[in-house]
Amino acid sequence: MHMTTDSFIYNPCDEEEDDMALVCCHANDGDLFLLTRFPDEDEVDITFRDDTIHVDANLKVTFSATRLLVEIDAADAKPFGGDITYEIRHSTQGNELPELDATLRIILRDVGTYVSEIS
Image (cartoon, rainbow, N blue to C red):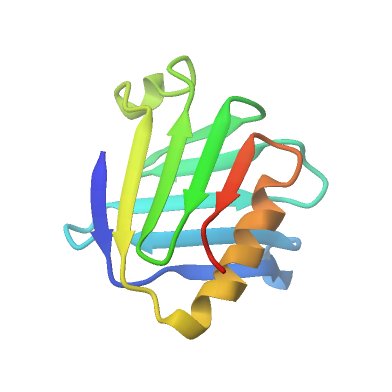
C-alpha cells in the first residue's frame, strides 16, 4: 500500500491516553494510518482505515526524511486485505524529524526491528 501525507501527528507519551506513544497520518486521499503502543504492553497496534491489528513480532519499520516504511507478517496482514507493506511518503519539516524518530523508537522498542535513516 502506498500513501502520501504532508506530515505526521506524533506524541511520545500522550497523558490523556494512559501514556500511549503514537504516530499517525492521514493520506491525501483520507486514509488513516496509525502506530500506537502503551508503555506496559509488549505489542504495537497498527490501524489502517478502520481496522486494527496487534503485532508483537515480525514487524519492521524504516524511517527516513521522506518515507516511513512499515512491513508486517502476512498472517498479521489478513485484516488489512493481505497488504504486508505500507510505504508512506511524507514531507515532514526537518526540525520535527528527531522527535518523530524518538517517538518511533519508543513504539518499536523490543518489538520488531526499527531502522532509522535520520542523522
